Length: 150
Image (cartoon, rainbow, N blue to C red; front, side):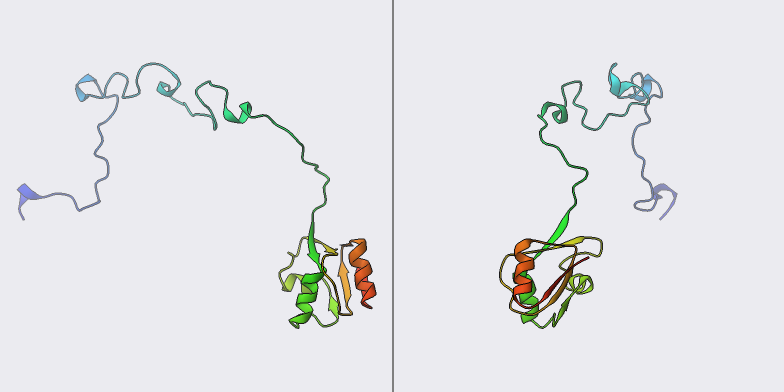
């Protein structure tokens, strides 16, 4: 190694681009590689999200329909056949409350729980939930259990 073949370490030098707007002799003077006129040539330009060059943007071309009810209350549904499967697997013995539901990952701690009537329940259970369908409540009570609304 001598002075004639010295060079920086690999990866230490990043900028090998031409400097823009530093005179015609540089090859990138004048418009500084931005072209002539138009929004993209101006300083401070930033394109809006979804901007399509003045064409009507897709988000505005597509028809809108329906509405979202801001007062809707969303419940996490749990069917009777799911509860019966937990009884068969020995997860539940006599009480099904929110802590058991959360532990068995049927709902999260912040969700409201509604017991639905699909399937049949053979076990005698005390079920606690925020809501019950009429068929679910009837099935729980027919099996000798109790439906407690929270």
